[in-house]
Amino acid sequence: MTTLAVIPARYGSTRLPGKPLIEIGGVPLVVRVLRQVQKCAIDRVVVAADDERIVEAVASCGAEAVLTPSELASGGDRVAWVVRREKAEIVLNVQVDDPLVGPHLIDPLVAALKERPAVSLALAAKRIEREEEVDNPNVVKVVFDASGKALYFSRSPIPYPRNPGGVWYKHIGPYAYRRDLLLAFSSWPQTPLEKTESLEMLRLLERGESIHIVPVERDTIEIDTPQDVIALEAYLKEKGDDLR
Image (tube, rainbow, N blue to C red; front, side, top):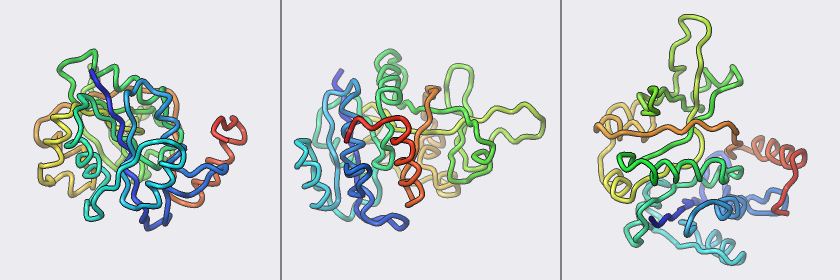
């Protein structure tokens, strides 16, 4: 069963212009993510860029990048554009703002699709440990049943803490799709709940599709602001940086 990881990389960013090329420890962010994905059980990795500068940065380190049309609206659309031209059966949509992605996040998702024929989309979820994340609308919460089937995603604290002892999970990391579902998803119009919460996974749930949740232990640091860059550099200084 062939696997393809696509890293959509858009040069423009409201909070962090030129984000894919921001250097962290002397390594561009997009290259950091690429190198982490190359450690995983993936047959091929491609960066889907909207700017020649990103393509050149990836090519300079001997990796593969394609220039996608600038008018594509989202990272998911860039992934679908690449996949329409490829034959892979399992496709990973890996965010360019997730430099700590790696085998601990990707390999369990790939395994879920290979081992469960009924699963067409698998996502990772991490138990929330910091209380402030429960109410943070930028942290996407997910609830799922005993079999791992997602029930709902929200920017609100779900479940609602009416009583003490609640446990919350947040969605982190990449999306692992079967090719047919990814291409179908990219053709569907947005749905009411998706528009309300601005969460594309709700488009699948509203159409009756099943999403399998894989709990993971390690957290990640997403890069959206200059403060996130500082936090990541501090983390790498403490833990060590094997990409320098």
